[in-house]
Amino acid sequence: MAIDARTLSTGGPESRARPLSVNRARTARRIVLDRWASRVVVVGGIFIIACILAILFVIALEVYPLFKPASATLAGTYGVAVAEESGRPAPGSALGVDEYREIAFVVTRGGALDFISLTGGANPPAVPIAGLDGARVASVAALGKGRYAIGTSDGRVIPLDMAFDVAFPDGKRRIRPQPVFGPPSAVDPEARRQISHLAASALESGAVTVAHVGP
View 1 (tube, rainbow, N blue to C red):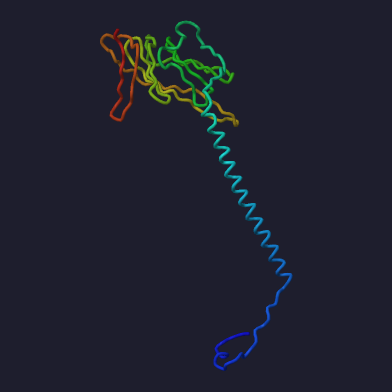
View 2 (cartoon, rainbow, N blue to C red):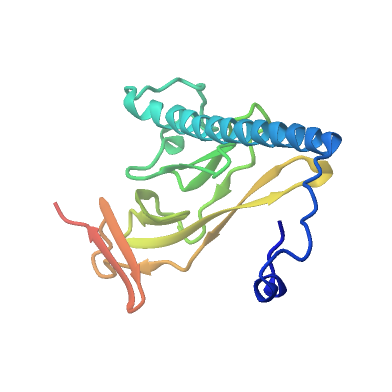
């Protein structure tokens, strides 16, 4: 029964309500859609949980090596170009390697930069240290990434910026050493004693070099 304002004024029903019609096909479609929607929600929830578990599994794989003891494996044995005393590494931080770990270098006592290929290729040619003027390398100090200070046997310090040129001709990586030597500075200009140990720091206010020249 339909009730409106006129029904209340007249005191009785004026028109009858239409009976509710149920379409069986439409109802069946709605039931099917509801079932598929519930299944999609369940599958989506399972997929999200699986993704979270996969992320936790990857994190566990990355963290697991931290709980294992440290180990080292011998990658190879290499020799310098000169086997004599002048070809031996100088005291201090005389060894280094490029960031791709393909070329190692050594500052020798005789006053040269020797390069060794770690990939089995030909060794780059050695480079003489500029500014030695007959002196020998007595010590080497590392100042940071690719920066070194070379102490000589006559009381001088030679800056070294060990750079590498990286190019990709024909899609293959090619690394070439490009050392840059700065002008020498005399730490012991009067006695010209040998620099046995060396340390240096470059600040905004200027560089400071500390050298051990006495007994």
